[in-house]
Length: 493
Image 1 (cartoon, rainbow, N blue to C red):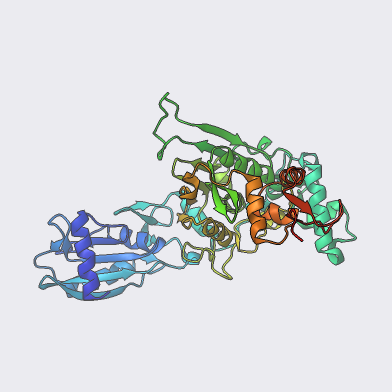
Image 2: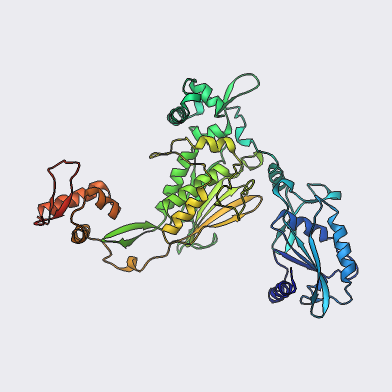
């Protein structure tokens, strides 16, 4: 930090009248405050921050009189040795308003070293995190999540002792096994179904040799996982306003609410349907045709919901918490228990080559778990967040807004704004007129080209083509049922 940066920081705090999420000031005229070690812990466990000694908050962020900068610098450094691991800040003495103050830049420590705690209080009593302009003690749950960063969690590999193979969905299991054999014929081609499921940790044997589904196997391929874990579901709520407290004119708190259950592929599909059901579909003009455009691109929503269910915390402490999908008047929020894991941070989300799976077995299983309507639940290639960004960009929408903490992760998508074309009452409603208009600039078109240009179904396009042929507006270029069939304006050779 240099003198100009310090001046800007102090000016900002004078304006708002308080410390900030990333900066704490202390008078420290005669001694270092006892709470300083808590701030050192909090900044180290969060995103880092700045401590300024020699500035009085109660006196409007002015320099404290009789402040001894060199003495307090040495005292601050000695406080850093009271933490585990030891904090190593960048400490400088800088001029401010004709006097001197001490500035200490506290770096965030590596995830593998968290939590940073006050040694004499111990890990569970001496670990803090920055919240607003204050320091709060981390809960036992949050500390346990930080400790998980030091090893690979295996909660998704837990045996579900009360479940049996009968609790798996036969259709999902068959599709999963068939895909695995297709992908890995040399390794899995000759193995039995049960051996494949054991090898891929869909199933595990207990100490008595009995076979049970794992948590990952049950969540991905189970008939009804909530029979064993009732809160491992998705809750969907559509609110009438921009906050949870607003009500409709007739007093309702929710426009729609649903508890979504089943295996992960079903929960993803049903949640996507709930969002679509409660969203507006607009229309924009592309070329000659009107195209329906949703408030939230289905591909982006599906990816976000899949990621939330795949990467959420499945430790015993969080199995009473669900994934929440909240639809407001101006945004869609998706929240899941457990923050980002491993090398993945807010800064590295979507970056090439940066990927980490808290639930390695579940992630692997979902790659080849059939998704309703075709395909598989996830790709699991570290590209999910980029896919969300791309989908929103293609829809000319703002980038997603992620928020990460130790206890939860959230992703917010802002609602798509209505375009000028959508405000037009006649915006592309006449499909047959649009087909004629397209043929004014094309010598001929196929039904497939019209389907792709319009976004309409094959059946709808064919119905309009038949109507135009009957009206003798257009004519086919090939005999009926020809795979090369195209259409042109009638009378044009």
